[in-house]
Length: 276
Image (cartoon, rainbow, N blue to C red):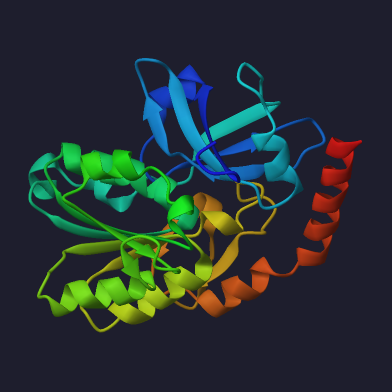
């Protein structure tokens, strides 16, 4: 448990570990009647045959996942799914010295980590801005420090680092004259929206990850439909990463609240079942 509500799991899955790449995700089910949950790959070890996932308890299904003990099994784990990050198509020579800015909000730190780790190994220069409500909710700090050039911490309550939003820190970096060839934002939908608004006039290309709106993960259910550049796209098979300036974030935010009453009811039943 990285925090009281955030759990890191190393999953033995040799075939998945052999082909996993930064930017991709898995679909897991804790039990047969459980919901399919998309979780971005946090890390992978091809030698040991493991993939690492990080889950935050936000409802009934994630509560089931985090309740699993060491040595237990998922009913199924499907992946790796989705398209790898675009920079995976660049040569080592093209990545060396290339300047990246990553903005991670809350649990978004987990999927940011494998991307930063990969770029660090290729000789890229990476700044990472990590935001959390409070210092107690910061995750993977030491791991991130080991693979980035500069780590900038932001907390809403000022308990560590910059007292304020990640967008304020991004503005400060640009005001200092820092330049970047590429920006990536992963975290809550509202955070990614305002990162896009902050960087819009900077001329820096921005990629965002829309893994949080996926359900089926194979393009069949249609739940991950999103408007990008005026066209309907499917996050699970065409993403999860898209041009941050082209995403209709207002539409995505509305979609995320559609089934909130049902989610609250399911989580309540899950809590009762655990306490019975």
